[in-house]
Image (cartoon, rainbow over all chains, first blue to last red; front, side):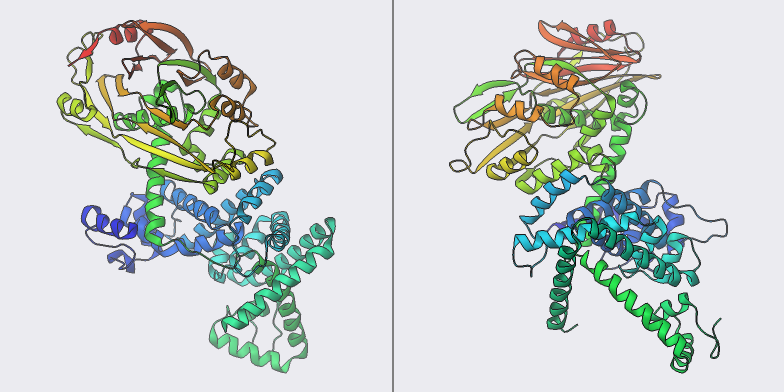
Length: 239
Length: 400
């Protein structure tokens, strides 16, 4: 109902070209570079097209980082708010990598949010989330709590990595291409592979250290169970 | 790079593993690996190491992946952009008066935002007359000033709160999120509730009563025609799940006293009604004069809630400046008083306007006076105006 209302209003009032989301308008074929130039002169159609093109991927990165659909949506909006307020610069050679810029901002925004979760509050939030578990297959709150502990450890481990490394990791595992990862962290595309290998090594190390600090066997068991349940789900899904 | 006979480096092997290599190269590289035990072993090691990390990284995802529909997300974003533009003009930078007088239209929006802020603050010091037995209905009868550090005002500004997700201080936002998860929030407020109208008669009919205008204006303003803005009425309600609220408060080591027994009263519904408002804007050179009026907003709280106890619980939320809490607690007759947060640096005085008690707030840039009469709230203020000028304008207000 609401989307319909939105589409109607936009079509009739502000957007005669009907860019919208179902049918990209004339900007649908424009390159990201053209969009960014238009953003600099405050073109709302260009902003809408940029949103249509990149929001889902930005959201997915943040969903993985935060584990919370609400928070991911909130932070993804913050990323695009920033694009609206201070669009990325256009290089002197005219080169623009909008996706890379968005991914970098998304990663920084997400990690900042993670860092500022305080322990006491994290506990409160977790309790709050348990009321509405995100995972369908998990048996009960106790087990979900264990899984959540493990996931927290992974997030803490990510926070210990260098900014470049953790950005590369979160982007890669969100399905971002090598070229866009390279643009986001400012390295050559040919160096992405080795950056990933080193970042993954650092992550496993940081995770083990963190998990050892707080009863590693417990977490490993939870991790194994979590992997098993995911695998069995995948096989039944036929993927 | 790596041809058929040359061994592949780590980056190339990893890219091959991730399928991030052009087809022609991938074919050549794979052929090399088949013939080269060393590269094959290297690739296998990388594959295993990637699999281990994949397990960790995949665990981060919730297994259900709801994705908000794009148009809905886009609409929310547009609202947020509008709010951000409004809050940057009303809150950021410089002094209170400069913020207030930044731009006429934004100012009118800011006026409404201030009223909305008042609605939040009202929860701390509602102003009450008993209306019937079912509800405690709180109405504003007088104002009191409480000095608030500027950074805290920004934190409590609902727009700023929404924008500080990445800020280091997450306490308030987390708290708000918990509350959102614990009750049903409904509002009829629109994202752009302010309109410009062309005549005083339009404003009067919007107010559902007669708009008041000053008969005595300072030199420079006397021949100025004001721009007229109206703010839409709106209401908001929050149905709180009492048992959940108890749990949250306990977790924060706060007392849940004041809330009813959840076994007999599972939910309590708070609501705020804000009537229509009108703002007149007079501009003369760099000076701006604003005159605002509206009926008193009403806060409705079921009588199953002990408002005194609840107020103490709210004031005990950690992180509130102790000095500010002390000032709020010191307000006499708090149920009849709307607390106005005043930034440090401004001075306040209790005055009388047309026989009604008034609160005068002055700053080096200007002054504003607030009063309540016959159930209506009034504000007169501007930049480049002295306290005496503001008081004199206020005293000359009369119905059209």
